[in-house]
Length: 626
Image 1 (cartoon, rainbow, N blue to C red):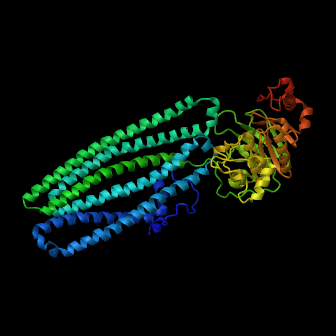
Image 2: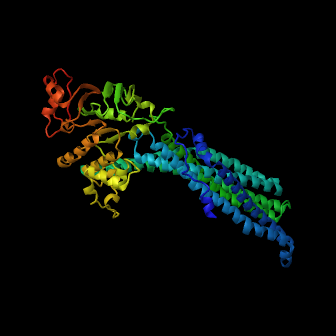
Image 3: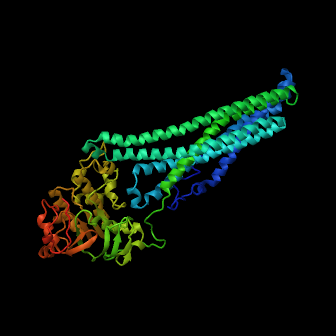
């Protein structure tokens, strides 16, 4: 039986990945649309449960009147039919109604709706543009997704369990009081108006302060996760006190926001206590007076006061529910600001998959500046990389080499110009097909906190075990992988590598990343300091495999160690977003100038100091990274 309720919603059913609406009510409608039928069923079941509860109170008043009219010895015989009917209500109808309402609420809607919101927002955010993540804390973003799913569900059920239930009881109470005596309606109406004014006055500040608390909580989570994620840097620089101060500031803001919120809730609770006290006194006194005048019976007194006590009991719960409702609305509004941002890099509506044949790359007069004013990072750059050509990018830090690589991957859109692969503008093809055609190993290698096998297989998910091991062997990684053991006792290729691969050395991470690249076997290769974390012996071994992998592929390699790219077909010298020279290693040495100066001035294979103007032979000076 319970399984039936649990299967009514599949929160992970196939659905388009699209931007959720940025408006509050549109956001709610968007996520409630898949469950609107079940939502109506919950409302109906809540109505039935409330009617049954009120029927029991009416029965209580009726029993008192029947007891007053009957002798004890004949009471059951005189009232067996009503007693039997109410027994059926209590023992059958009430449990069945409660089961249906509870099953739809607790087993179907609460877990289903929460996870619909979380799963769909996660999928959309995962496909956000790179700048979205570089400008925020990963922990804060994750917290927003968690909070928003829960808050949207709590808002919906705050309406159902709070406003909807209150409406049913208010209408039912007024109707029953009208049948007993119209005078009894008066205190209910006064209480209702005062209750509404209290809600109108105090609940909106709860929403605002709840939104502030949600933001403070997210920021606190972001800072805590940032400290833990970068724990190696914290340890290396011995700054735990500085991290304490950095995180403490967010803790203080969260504490202050919580105090402000709870102050408002305290005032609301006190106001409600006073209002309920008035209602209980007024109805109790008025019902007794009406009994003394003969206008109502003893059963009427019992019914009236039972209804008021039930309403008093419910009003505190409903006010807390309404307060929670507005708190949740504030949390949802806060989450929308992060979740519903439009992507800055999107596929065109008619985008086609990239088809790579010869893998020619053309940069045609491109300019780019990360959306900032001032000098562009890439300034009117044009470059043609022929099919199968191996090109090295050389230049100081900040010259634009890595930016050029990011633009080829279309992590950002150009300010002007275009980039073509085999004549296809990369802005007109799908991003997934573009990046599937490019294999990348960067100097800052990060791995997923999964097994070594999963990290290598990420290059080609359908790979067999033999192919994974072969790629690891070619990357000189197999020997150290088989000796791995993680905290949970998993060994070899099953061992987990820790967050961002922190359990492995820099060289080990790089070799796993290269194995992943070898497995991907993309027609275009991009190597950004791909062997920078390796010792010379391992570097030489891996370079041999990389050179083999380069055969028949178009390659872009970025390196500060010129010895690692000297054998490439052509070297392109960049400075301040422009190309200031190109040629083979031998040609550039014969020409003298910047490259020759770099080659001769390197110490230990790294770029040295800035060359003099005479060494540049008319070229623009290049500041060199040490």
